[in-house]
Amino acid sequence: MSVQETPQAVAVSVEVVVFSIRDRRLKLLLERRGAEPQRGLWALPGTFLRPDEDLDGAAHRALAEGTGVTGVYLEQLYTFGRPDRDPRGRVVSVAYYALMPSDRLRLCAAADAEAVGWFALDELPPLAFDHGEIVAMAHGRLRAKLGYSTIAFQFLGETFTIPELQAVYEIVLGKPLDRRNFRKWVLSLGQIEETRELRREGRHRPARLYRLADPGDIVFFK
Amino acid sequence: MSVQETPQAVAVSVEVVVFSIRDRRLKLLLERRGAEPQRGLWALPGTFLRPDEDLDGAAHRALAEGTGVTGVYLEQLYTFGRPDRDPRGRVVSVAYYALMPSDRLRLCAAADAEAVGWFALDELPPLAFDHGEIVAMAHGRLRAKLGYSTIAFQFLGETFTIPELQAVYEIVLGKPLDRRNFRKWVLSLGQIEETRELRREGRHRPARLYRLADPGDIVFFK
DNA sequence: CCAAAATGCGTAATATTTACGCTAACAGAT
DNA sequence: ATCTGTTAGCGTAAATATTACGCATTTTGG
Image 1 (tube, helix red, strand yellow):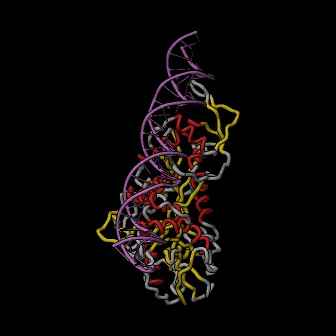
Image 2 (cartoon, chains in turn blue, red, brown, purple; image 1 turned 45 degrees about the vertical axis):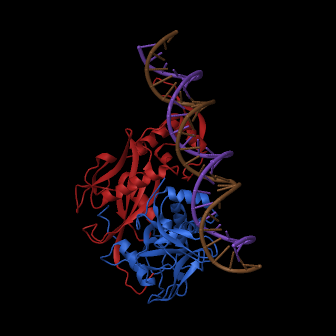
Image 3 (tube, chains in turn brown, blue, purple, red; image 1 turned 90 degrees about the horizontal axis):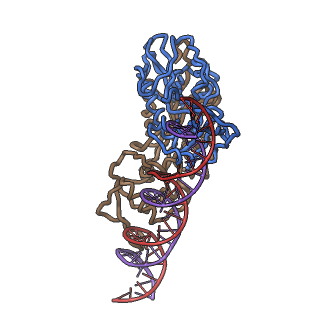
């Protein structure tokens, strides 16, 4: 790095694209901005980076402060730095995306946000700054990563049935999958182990509950 | 983003991991640091972000100033922001990686660098800051992306033979490939078209020269 | 004109993916 | 107790993709 150049002071923020599946749809967590600029528009949960904090830490904090959510899967997505992307000045945003089970939420509006809400990905309100661009990239990455990693499991609780897992794939990919082939495929990954319990709901045969063999880990395959 | 927080001033830099294939090995372009801190250590070409510049622009500039190289394939890799990663203060680095043909270089040492040089990936000198970590991630990304995109072509000139392309794959993946299957595979991608010319070298049948059907574009497949 | 080296084509064996028939288990209605 | 609708779960065959590899072709150097 060229140390003879004078480093220019820049504000660094993190923004988090939080995905969850609710009502059989892929949804996004947004905060309504309670301050200028762009007051009233919806925006991604985010925060400025603190002096002694690393980027992952800031992303976790943004999520905790904005929504009370902790312990979810978080991954760095991309860094956005167009000079004019924030009217307040030069802000470089490191975007993250997060996946969480639908039940894991206690909504608590952040101090400077009038509201927090879930929005279906295909019915998003107008977003602040360049957050639409960030969301589009996060969605693409999520779809791609379903195919070669176990991130999809992050949408589910500790135990889950194979049909529930299949629903996650179908909702994110937007297309139906064959039950029988899906079952074979997911079992062949060697990532889940069966429990002794069943999930009974509806007037039909109950499904066996499974558990991640290595919870917390994201495994890559193929 | 939480606008009530005071944004902390942070220096933002870009660092570029430049890959090329020279002498049938995967090599990396490094600059020897000519100033403190860590003077004398080798480091990735990089620069601080300027006020009116976007991140991609800064990465291209870092490359042009450090090495005189322009017009190469550049892609954002990851952003590194551990609080203690640079002894000068808080520096968040947006890392990029670049691929270039082996012939495309006019080495010109940057003003503050005593030297610029190519190093085989498995014989790297000690690197400054956390650049070793950045290089490791770039190498992983490069290998992964060979499998589902046409980045490999960026290592070659405008025209190339199929065996030359195969050598790129073999060197990056570190394993031999079957000539006949490789040919079928690469032709089936529909990304290259044959020219009327041949490349003659050595005492053997000359190879046909091909050209990218859509030069500059990186195509994803599978 | 022969040997060496590398291109270029074709075909068989193997593995992976996809399609889909069929049985099992449960809830609730008759 | 039996029937019915619905979803879970198993197995098998067909289609597709990948891999292995034999062999003829085209060039150069001696």
